[in-house]
Length: 126
Image (cartoon, rainbow, N blue to C red; front, side, top):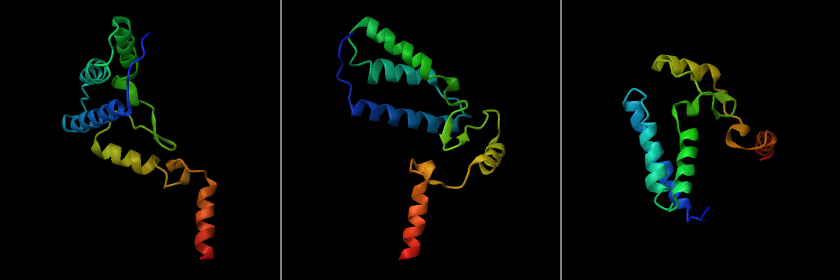
C-alpha cells in the first residue's frame, strides 16, 4: 500500500458534498443518490490521490460497505435518540421527535453530566 496525501480539506469537501446531497434528497422525497456519493468520494475527492489499482479497489470496497441506504438506520443522532423509521410521513417524524428526543442535557453536547451541576452552582453563587 502506498501513502497518499489525504488532508483535512479532502474531508471538508466530502462533508460539504454529502451535506448538500442530503439536503437535496429532502426535496426529492428522501431519495439519496448513494451511488453518486460513492463515486464522488472514491473516484474524485479521495480517489484523485489514489494511484494504485488495488488501493482504489480497497477504497471502493470501504465506500460500498459504509456509504449505503441503511447507513442511518438505528443510528444514534443525538444522545439517546435513535433515528426514526424511514416509513414515516412528515407528521410522523414530528411526533417521533417530540416523543423520543429528550430535553437538552450536557451529554447531548459531549459534556460530562456533572457540568450541568457546575453551571447551576456557579449561577446561584453569582
